[in-house]
Length: 249
Ligand code: COA
Image (cartoon, rainbow, N blue to C red; front, side, top):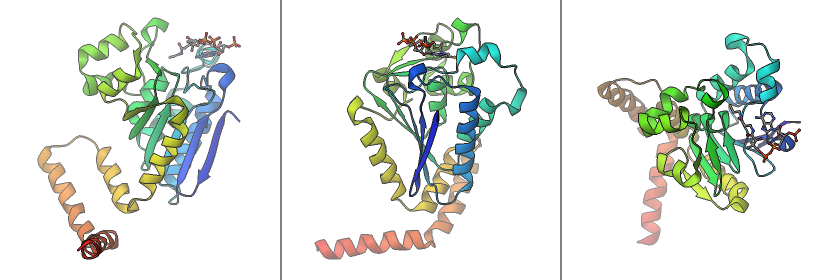
């Protein structure tokens, strides 16, 4: 199995498992990735999805053999199904990257909520060098994240960058020693899974909601905030706060 999916309580782990080819992603793998993310979206028991690689590598990007062999098939192609599913995923998505994050290995991170990078990871988007153009909305999201000139350095010149630069860019959340990556990814997903589920779900929905005016967003948040004040989750958190105060007092 080149995409391994395991579910552990509320956490679904998706692993790229083609280490002999640096986890280069084939059409069949995109299809399995799309299935996994669509399943995660539909299953109320899943609250966090992690995606990581194997063999010390995240992924060397799209399988180049497939670029030659596979006839483009428009929006129904598995790669687009995967990209739509990860971009719109209603569950928290956490990536753990190490070694190489090439092409879609970097661009998919723009759709993750949290990204842990092993120290020594190299990121690159060599689309132009291959005679191609950016994908996964990276031509929109990368300049928005890091500014147009720095995006051009990576999307036009194809310059690679290291984990420290990715952290400075805000493309990754943190850098961890390579041997710690699996453990820290687990710890982070467990931390998230322990939080009030509905509050997490609504916050994720706000984070990926389409752009709107500040006034409209304040109003949308306000309506949800009011509902949340009356929720059982908030009541439990408020009670715990005052009980903690009584215990320490
Ligand atoms: N598509 C298909 N096969 C790939 C691949 C890719 N994107 N990346 C690596 N592989 C395969 C290699 O062909 C090789 O297969 P083989 O053992 O049958 O010859 C195997 O994975 C190991 O790769 P190799 O090149 O020997 O390892 P390396 O450590 O010397 O270099 C890379 C690793 C990733 C730097 C190099 O393979 C590379 O540049 N790959 C292409 C990356 C790329 O441009 N991706 C597309 C982005 S849009």
